[in-house]
Image (cartoon, rainbow, N blue to C red; front, side, top):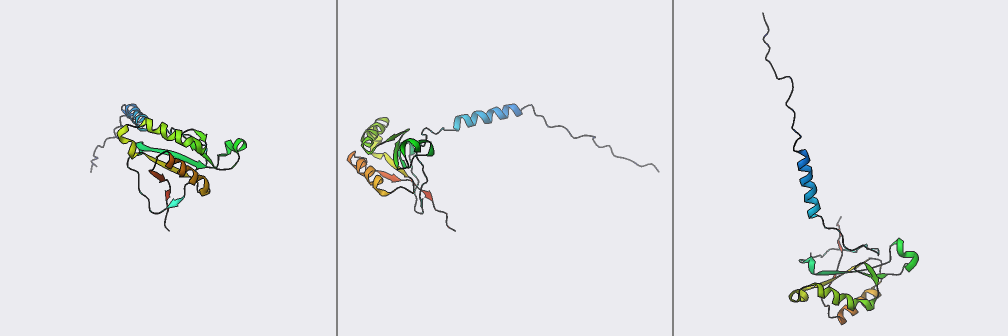
Length: 156
């Protein structure tokens, strides 16, 4: 008795990879357009404290950051380990804050200036003395909307 074999296809069809370079370039272009590079290089340590009651800022374009903390190791030989203030990409003193506030206000439309927020990103090891000095200078410059940045506390 003859055995009937069904013919199967010997090999599965190959997947076409012709469109793979197009997909890779589309993904590359997408990430190039969407990615925002950090415009401020941190020169101070910035380990933010933890908090439980946090609210998210609505319009981050109206937020100007003031960093306070000890200089990173690269600058500790020059500046020591005492806490420093960083405004944009440079170290500053408390006296420079008024000029910083005015400079930041000029970047924003006049109608939106009352909504501007100055966010203090203070290292958790910094004493409150320098923070109080910064807040006093912001008050003198009529920058009354101040925010403290922190990270959410993870409950266990």
